[in-house]
Length: 238
Image (cartoon, rainbow, N blue to C red; front, side):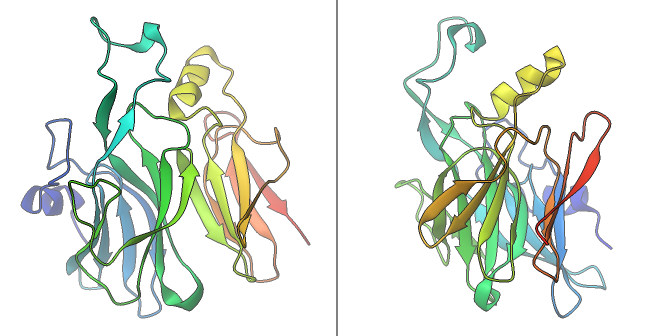
């Protein structure tokens, strides 16, 4: 339907920090009611709507945010160290339709992967060209923060009551997750239930190397984890 590499090359990322504004990594996809596909392009920091005939429209761009480097271990810093703050890319890893038809975008905040720096964004139904920004130097447009204080989001899903479940790579961020993978012992993933201002961790310590999460029609949740190992599908509820 769409060559994402060619599309990204024709629509380079204005918020790229790595010298690769035409990079593309279509990471997650959902279907709209009219048959369009909604794709989170992680490398392009964008969310794209694609029609069945392959026509593409950028629904939202995610801007960089200035974050603190205070939690980066010294052995993971470049020679001479890091400045106190640096711009981090807001990497969209998951998209879901929420109550009222609004589109919600979950992000994995890029290097330095600071825990608590990820957000879930909300753009109203029917909007195109939104800019999601928590950076005072970059004005946002038709996008607001729905949830903040999250960490390295892998996937998310709304249940039928409207509660949002957020699947995070690790409590200490994707840096800790990648380090654990390298040693063969990834840290536990975190599954949170966000509901009317409360945050509850579901089955702490039960998941590792998260994949994706989806809500079932009967109130249950399906998730994949251990995706770099044996792999498994888990059903929660009902």
